[in-house]
Length: 286
Image (cartoon, rainbow, N blue to C red; front, side, top):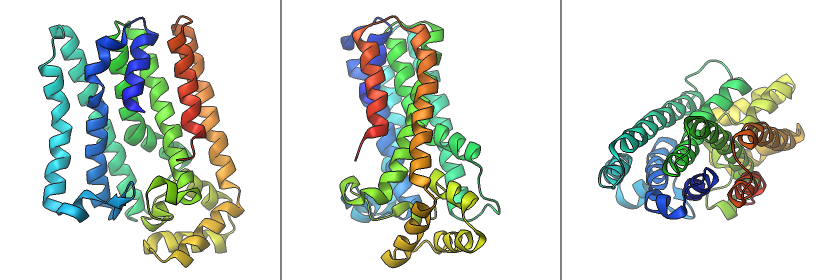
């Protein structure tokens, strides 16, 4: 989704696809680098239906690969023919949002490893998602707008919109974790196995009676792969309509974010594509 965001946002501010095409690998290289590290941190054995990198090649190679992929995009910018001021702005966008991405991952680890004595609030969850997942989407949108010659307001607002779209993408990912695990190439209820405090979990913990709440927390803290226990946890989550709640939250995020975008972009085919793209993110089945 991130390379496409670069192209659409470039067009939406009046640029040409050709101006941004060679930069589309940037957020995807970084994203895949974070996934390699994420699988080590979460002890996930599968990624997209195949063995994770650290399982296939070893933890040492996986760590080195992950850090290498964080640095490669700087080379793409450096070796481009962009003017110095545009290069500097691109460096600033990449470094700022890459740091945000790592801060979001730190919060996620802190919660799902049980180091926090409290359950995160919904606001804290959304902030974590904005940092962890939304940052890379925002990076893509801002780079696209920059390369398309957008003004500072357009770059900022498109970045904010993409960040919220990234959060919505993450919420849908949380739902698909146990709604369509086979299609996503991950193990069933991986987020439950990893003890993650997703929006669905947080909503359930806030709504469930004490007995169910404590049982869900117990299973989360086990970090188990026992399918019977995972299905028990999922049943508790579904019982309290947490899927429907999360779906509504996604749609609200996208609608609120679009209002600002609508005000700073002229009507164009690219603008229509951008809105359709954001709607596709929250309605996807894989």
